[in-house]
Length: 157
Image (cartoon, rainbow, N blue to C red; front, side, top):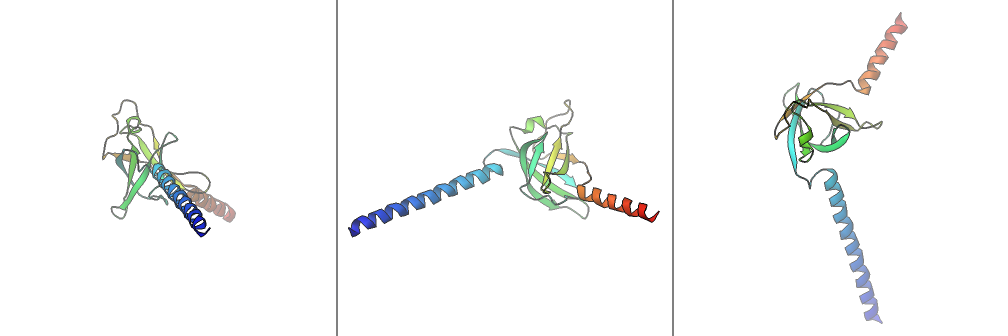
């Protein structure tokens, strides 16, 4: 009787450990897939004057499709910030050297992402270590601040 309880307890413990291990492996795989850890990718850079809250791990999108992630953000000097992106090797052939990048919002919650707009078809494909040209866009916060200034100036008149 005691021997059966011990075996039953060991079986339950083994199943619990196996389920926990399986959960851990699936979690690591899903997180790694989301961050492009298990796919081959190419590193490219872009320089910005303001990254507007962009963080390592944020998405990189080309024409609305996730093609990579932000892998590093470095301050080069007082006015230039370098953003390194890992772009999936399968998608790099569609991105041209004259493509432009901008920091954009990923919805109403304010998550940031890098948006790559297509370049000209006559331009060459992007290669390892290339630098994409950034374009500054106005954020919703800047737009609201400017609207606030306009409203205040019209109240004074």
